[in-house]
Image 1 (spheres, rainbow, N blue to C red):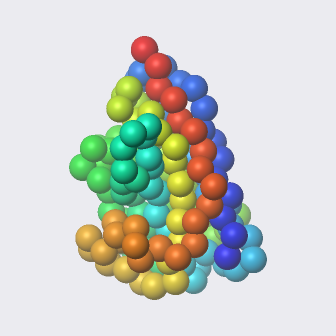
Image 2: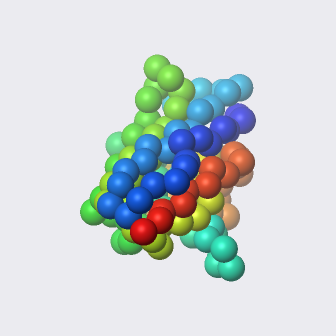
Length: 126
């Protein structure tokens, strides 16, 4: 599967963005999908994930109350809606896929994700 992340941009504190992860080559019904981000000078970290079956989601504590991840089978895409953006949300955001039905905290383990898209830059300004 090939993944294409998009939807990043420059947004003010308190604003919203919807990131998209479009898949090609295979249907996302066979994959769990996660979003990860990497800020300058920091390690890549988990943001959110949706399970292969779409019955389970997981969020990092830092975004949990203001983010929603969803799968759109018709468009073969996964979306990450982020609201009330903060300066610390500034990072390059990557989507990744895994052909396993991960559950619980395993959904946030980036070492389990085999397929990665290129990143999309999110910059939150004051």
